[in-house]
Length: 549
Image (cartoon, rainbow, N blue to C red):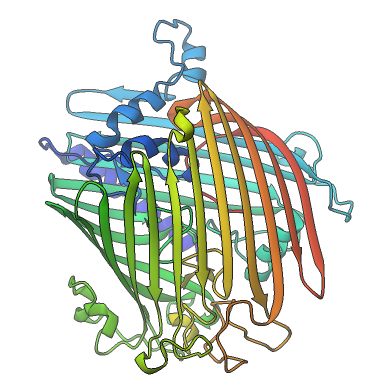
């Protein structure tokens, strides 16, 4: 439950403090960089330069020499070091708390997000009044967040980071419908107000990062992990909520190897012996090989296994689950039947600061039927994209064009607890399976101003009552159709466009004034759903949240 996650995060924070007070360490790199696409794409010119040897497909990043200069530029954007007024320094230039000594550093900030807007296609005439909780005028769409972030280092081997958010939000109808279906705010937390006309939720993240030597990092905490170079990932994305994790990353020569263990939950299949949600373990391996400065290949596998059977009988922890060998977990720990996936990534820098990238995913595999397009024995997906910086010679003009497709029934399993999900949300693309999508994003920054435009098109197949056409990965793997073609079911088209203009107020915690617009059109033979939204407000934090599905 969310309370369990909060307690776990509290214990992790306590552990961070104990280690921070007791440690005396030497030189190594360990600083964690919170991930968001809006922020990370500003490093395109550095990480996709042909002179860079950085591994780019495992995120969040640890700050290293490749991105350190650019990171410092972004953190000092518009900073006036001569400003003497304390209030203006804290508002525009600095962390609220910022302590730096030779032995340790510590910073802390209050994170506020207050936005309000209007959906011009919402015909329900609802009015959301946030005044009782400190939000301004009535609005049809709005967000009120009070949060915090704390981080720091002890020497150069330890770093820690934690953030927390208390939220009330009025979402557009399409998003609210999805929240009510799963009882969860996508990528975040439980909806504590299912009977109200606004959503109420909170969650925390916490990480301890330890780098005993330059080539090895150990991360413990509750957070998200993303594998790939794209905006989406069909292997492992940051779409789902933060999960407890232990992640070990090694860098040896041209190789980067990651092994990660997670402890996840599911909302749809009763309770386990603890009296809460049923739980499952996730084991992930990823090996990234930089053949040279331009070409790299990655090898991925994952194994999802329930902690208990359907009657609540705990199976215990199988020692084979600790296996660090790549692909070994694809066959599953001997005593714990689960769901195995295998994937591959690739990247080639076709020009300086521009790269082609892709992913290939295999879930269920039967060699004899592999080349038959219309069968349920093989479920797979692939991604192909191009991204880069300084296009047409314009500095800080970043772009991305990406295509993703996943066949029906991918990620699902006969035992729904083994599905590739966390809190009933896909661990891959937000669209789940049985879809094709095309995404284009352009971003331009000048001074404190940032402009971003995004266009999505997707085609997928929905379920009629009693059907399972393969899009909803939380359903048990019992196909309604003896076929496996993308778009089967109720054929649906989705058009999505979003534009953002923001002005950076304080770069230390990404506080900005933001004006945004969203147009969404979803249609099939049964219904049409539209949203046309204008919003304005104050945003902060580096969290990555998706609304484009």
